[in-house]
Every structure is written in C-alpha cells, then in structure tokens.
Image (cartoon, rainbow, N blue to C red; front, side):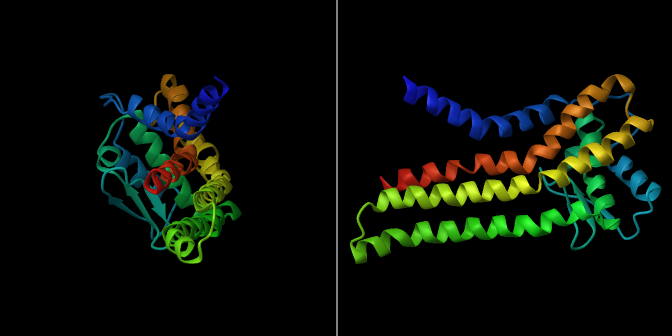
Length: 227
C-alpha cells in the first residue's frame, strides 16, 4: 500500500506541474471578442512603448513562445500571435517581459544563459553515458549494471531539474515584475480578468521547471529498454 501511495505521489510531483500548466493555458485560450487586440498587437505596442530597439517579433511554430537573446527575437505561436484570449495576452506580455530584462541588461536576465546551457549539457552527457553503459558493462563484466543505469539516469534528471529551477527567478520576474504591472496598469485587459491573467502568468513562469520534471519519463523509458 505504501509503495502504491509513494508511486502515486511521485507521479503527481513529476507530471502534476506540467499538466497544470497546460490546463491553465488551454482553459484561458478562449477567444474573447471584447479584447482590445491580439497577442501580436500587444507585443508590438510594448516594443514601441518600452523603446526596445532591435527587438523583432515573429510568428513561430505551434507552442514556440520564447524570447531569444542571441538575435533579440520574440517568437509567438500562431494561437498567441493571432489570438484574442487571456492566454494570448498574458503569454505575449511575458515574452516581452524577457525582452525588457535583456535590453535593460538586468542581472536576472543572465540566469538563462548561465544555467540552461548547463542543463542541456548534463542531459546530453547523461544520455550518452546511458547508451554506452550496457556495452561497457558487458565488456568489463560490471555487476549491477541496471542499478548503475538507474542511478546515473536519476542524477542526470535531478541535476537538469535543478538547473531549470535556477532559472525560475528570471521567469517569475518576467511574469510578475514586468507583465503583470503592464497589464494591470493598461487598457489591455478588463479588470475582472486579472485573476485569470495571474494564473496564466504563473503557468508561464513555471513552464521550464514543469517540462524538466516531466522529462523524468525518460528514466522509465531507459529502464523499460533495459528490461
């Protein structure tokens, strides 16, 4: 019974945040005719208002909502770019929040470059080690290879999650120190929708960590492959 409860708790911890993030974004994705503009129109307005020289807005692929410092580009997915929903407005403001951070050279804007590259490097190293370990173990007759796989996989995933968690202050700042004051003070969102906007901005801030936690699924894939 304890094993079952522990498994359920682990699954909730791993997949709960990602499911919640997707649920919130979908819940507030409904088109609202009363909205003053689309996500793209809001983004362009904020780029001009905050004098973000050189910031380019593009329509990305599905689910491609991000700010890329390397070329000063804000990408909004079609449903956000053309959408007149609470999710569209909040996500657009969040990504412009990142552009404001970077163009002001705020210390919080350097967290992504500092930690995300390390997270990707750790993930790649972990995958390569997991791929090579069966061959090495077979050649060297290493006992308990499956247990070693589990430990390496777990450490890889936990390290990656911690790296993503280190970026959380940057995401939180983009949502609640940049986007929310903009939306609260302007005429972009009717006041009655602000509680829902807060929900969406929280989901935006937690996206990286939620996705990293969901990557724990990779560990189970490796274990199934080993079996």
